[in-house]
Image (cartoon, rainbow, N blue to C red; front, side, top):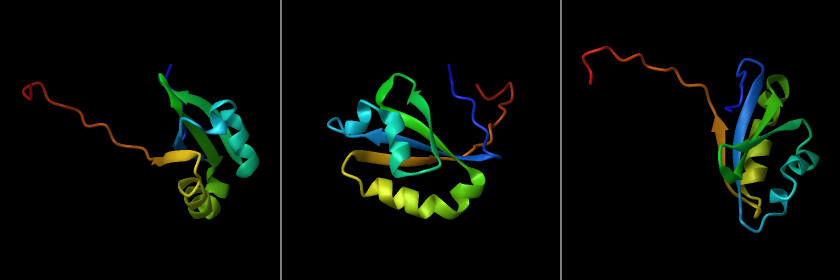
Length: 95
């Protein structure tokens, strides 16, 4: 089941962990390093990719520190900030 995201109140991150990362055993423990970060769970069937959020009022001031810290962490392979995207409605003649 897809995660229900509220981009009005939260900033979201998808974090891909290295195969040897200690966070794979306990992904929620990343919140100990970054207070305010909340764990939402695994992304789909990808066992190494996990979704986190932070309240927007904290995220706006902590964003650069959190992203920079995660990107320099040896346990983390990739960090992607989740941004809302507009869905495009296709017309009937486009197929």
